[in-house]
Amino acid sequence: MKRLLVTTDFSTYSKAAIRFAIQLASQGEYSLTFFHSYQVLRPTTWSEPVFLSFEKSESTKVTRKLYKFVSDVYKSLGIVSQELQCVAKVGLYVDRNIMDYASKYDYDFICISRKGGGRTSQLFGNNVSRLITKSIIPVIAVPSSYRRAPIVNITFASDLSNLDDELKKVASFSEPLGARVELLHFKVAIDYISNGIQLHAIKHKLDEYNIGTHYEAFDYEKPLIHNIMKVIKHSRPSMLIMFTDQHRSLFERIFMSSISADFSLISKIPLLVYSKIKQVSLLSS
Image (cartoon, rainbow, N blue to C red; front, top):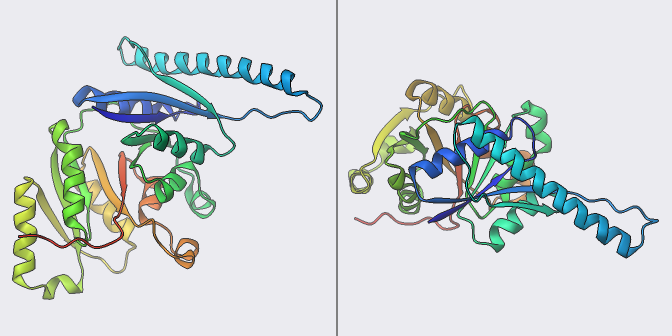
């Protein structure tokens, strides 16, 4: 059984991640833990015993609020919640608190809602983009507009450089859901001169996993995100899977944004992001 850490900040838009998690668990074997990160500020005049007592009281209060918040989402979907796993944890930084907990207890995925925020959020970052660019655990970013629906078809975007690793991860996620998968690749100049052996190896690999293909000519007049959005708008998948490079240089992190993180801010469908492996894997025949 895979373990999913579902985060919420008690806002209305954060209910989207809970709805998606419930849908995911209805299609596959998933154990859900609902997580809230909060802060407890200590007045300088408080003694240690007074602060510890207050901290304990706050923990109880926040945990109860979390149970009620999640239960209400279940009720709104007409589902009776049973034995909810809820965790409220103190932490100064929300993204770090989530990652530390997910890593410590070996979660398979982190699920978080996002409300967008335009260019300002892209420049200064938010919890979603920070998780995508830093978390070693795959992150599912769910748009606030998400309403519960079966996951029937999945698109995963690939540059084909680490296809072996990507196919294993995509198949591990999609097969238990019974969802169809299509690979999306934008053809650039190098693709038109690729030798037949490589193309045959790629097709062979995709056939092994029963994955379809969508090769699209890249429109150089538009950014990559716009190219992806154009395809998504037409194919209308249940969700998108991407792979992001978390090992970029300082210069790249400052001046070259992460496509996956940027896309998470504008996507109208759930986005699952894995970290790319450091070294390129070779396609086996």
